Structure formats: C-alpha cells, structure tokens
Amino acid sequence: KQEVTQIPAALSVPEGENLVLNCSFTDSAIYNLQWFRQDPGKGLTSLLLIQSSQREQTSGRLNASLDKSSGRSTLYIAASQPGDSATYLCAVSPGSARQLTFGSGTQLTVLP
Amino acid sequence: SAVISQKPSRDICQRGTSLTIQCQVDSQVTMMFWYRQQPGQSLTLIATANQGSEATYESGFVIDKFPISRPNLTFSTLTVSNMSPEDSSIYLCSVSGAKNIQYFGAGTRLSVL
Image (cartoon, each protein chain N blue to C red):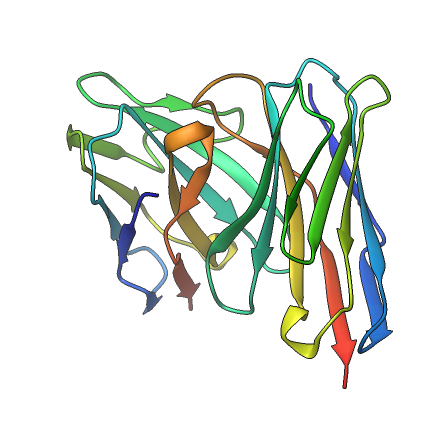
C-alpha cells in the first residue's frame, strides 16, 4: 500500500527566504506526483504536476523535482512571501485519471 | 481546467441525521472522487464514482454509511448517513482534468453535534 510522508510538518520562515518542502513515497510505481496548496477552510489548489518520466516542473517561484527511483520529491519556493502561508500537500497517483494518495502536509508560515 | 461547485459549503447537523453533498462539474468526466479530511489530518479517499455503475469504496468506508449517486457525467452526490460527531470533517470531491491534473471543489465543512 502506498504511503506518502511529508517533512517537516510545520515550517516558519522570514519573508524573502528560499525554502524546500520534502515528500517521500514508498511505492515508486507512480504515474504522476502533484503538489497542492490548501488555505485554511478552503479546498485544494493544484500547484505543479510532475509526470513519472519527468524530473522537474517550474511555475513562477515554485520548482518541484521528482526522483522516482528513490521515492522523493521536493518543492522549492524562492523568495517566500507572507501570501505563501498555507498548507502544502503532495499526492501521488498510480495511473491516469486515478485517485490520489496524499501526504499529511507541511504547514508553512512566512513571517513579514 | 475543471471548475467544481460543491454544496453546501458548510453545515451543522444533529447526531443521527443525514446530509447529502452535491458536486457539479463544468465538463463531462468519467470518474469523480470523494475524499474526507478529518480535523488536522490529510485527505483520505472515500470512494470513486463512475457514471452508470456502482461506486468503488476504499477500505473502511461502506455504501450504507456513504451512499453515492452518479446520475450523469457532470454530477455526483455523497450522503453521510446516521451521522455521529466522528463524521465531523471536510468532504471534498475531485475530478481528473487535462494532463491528469486533479481539480477539487471548495469542500463541505461538516460539524455534527
């Protein structure tokens, strides 16, 4: 059974810092990995999706990497801003249009 | 992208009652997914709903407790039956869109007294 772990569970940084969030998964037979953002009391917003054949994806200040063989992904946030404060979730899928297995999330606070 | 409307956004219910949550998508999709997020926890898949067939439930979730309807390719409902305080959670529906990106509704925040 796939298990997804995220470290750290919580992170607090001053504005402007670069930071890395970590995600690991136990079964490397994934189809893709997706990073989401969840604001308090809200649904999930997709940030980046990495196909199993890809090594990284970038969107603005965000860069996600994937090392499928070692079962790891990282989300790099450059020049953090208070608006980046949210819970970040990674999730993996075993196939096309299939359900996701989620990690427990990293709660990020960016201090002004 | 897919736009998902979920109703109600929140509700407070009495023990023993049932609540039906609606999920409407702006495009036709084969599969819709229902997740539960308990307080302070991550998301757990309840079931996968295919149009025209019975929903597939994950371990620990049963149809009598969480009946699901999928009458067409843009709509689904999840009912939380005979509720107890342990059912207090956020319930979310999702679909897989272009490039296999998963899109989520805003969720239904349920509190059971």
